Amino acid sequence: MNIQEYIESGVLELYAAGGLTPHQSAEVEQVAAQHPEVRAALDTCLRAMEAYALTHASAPRPELEDRILKQLQAASAVRQEETAPAGKVFPLDTFASAVPQANTSNRWWQIAAVVVLLISVASNVYLYTSLQETREELFSSRQNARQYALQVNRLEQQNVQSESLLGVLRNPQTLAVQLKGVAQHPQAQAIVFWNQGTKEVYFDPSGLPAAPAGKQYQLWALVNGKPVDAGVVTSTDSSLLRLKTVAEAQAFAVTLEQEGGSPVPTLEEMYVMGESSAR
Image (cartoon, rainbow, N blue to C red; front, top):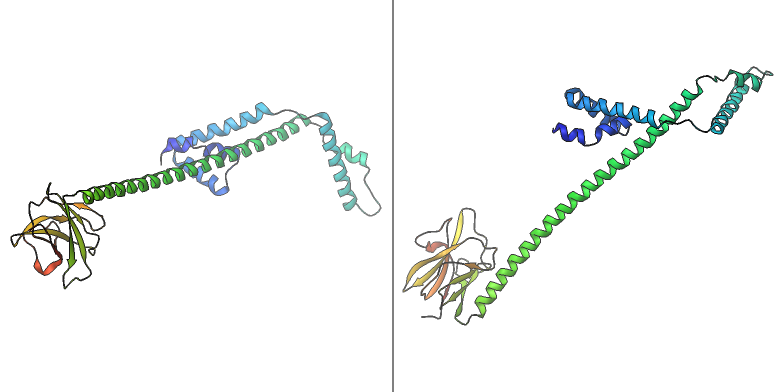
């Protein structure tokens, strides 16, 4: 726990103002018992609350005091009538003379202090609730902004891939070689885009099934009947991958190899193959 952040969080002021639940107050008392710094800060808050009540206490208007006293006298008279023996009623003047008149200013100071304390508690609870709501809204806004940024980044990547693919397809020197599934994998398919001018090779693996764990697809260019490594396929989720350059090829094939590729193809794990028209 960061003691300084806890002290500055406002929870001690709410405790002093009576704005916490019994459970929350117990937690504050437990933390104060364990950390002298919190105990000292809590004592300061309690003294400040007491000083605030003393400073802002003011006597009420005289007519308000008279009105409250009359209501107390009337209520007491009713209780006397209910509890007095049958046929005997205490005179109102007698009861009024029994009401303590001394120390009136002290009593009104206490009432004013309670009023000030209640106002302070209500204000602190409102501010604390508003702070919590603001923190939640800020956290939610940051989460939404992060998700939005990720979505924009994905769209930008897709846009770059689409533009690259269009550029490759529109190039008059680009040859599209369709690779079809062999007998063991008839549903598999892929496309090789081979630029015969720059010798660049782009590969679309989206028609291949996902490679098992620890395995990778590898593209081969068949040159005069010999397989030449054209690069490993890092992902089948991408729509277009740039692999190794190929100077010449009569056909292309894809095999499933151990992760990292192989110097020679595993013919038993061939998935697709297709002849190029550049021979």
